[in-house]
Length: 120
Image 1 (tube, helix red, strand yellow):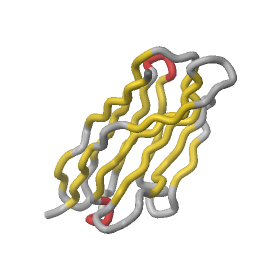
Image 2 (spheres, one colour):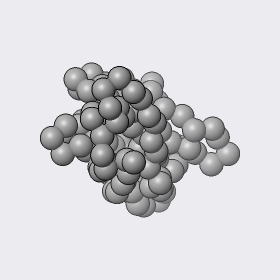
Image 3 (tube, one colour):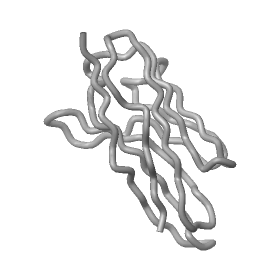
Image 4 (cartoon, helix red, strand yellow):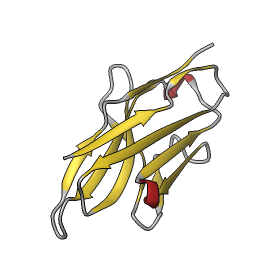
């Protein structure tokens, strides 16, 4: 099994910054793509940003230029630096990992979610 543990959420004023972290632990061969999703109140879960094993990233249009996604493969961890936060960024943020427990297989795992609230 693989566990994803998130941290870094909280309350911040508009224009402020937060850094989310997600660490993976357990038994696996390789962590492939990792991503952050969010679920805003009354909305479906949506992709915020994704990062490949090689470090290639893609972002939702709504966060481009404000959020930066990075990963530390040695630490099995990813980080989402969120700057210039807006009230519409308020959501529960979920870490996602595509994991190969053995060469050639593929499993999906989710973290428990961390609340980000942007409000004055």
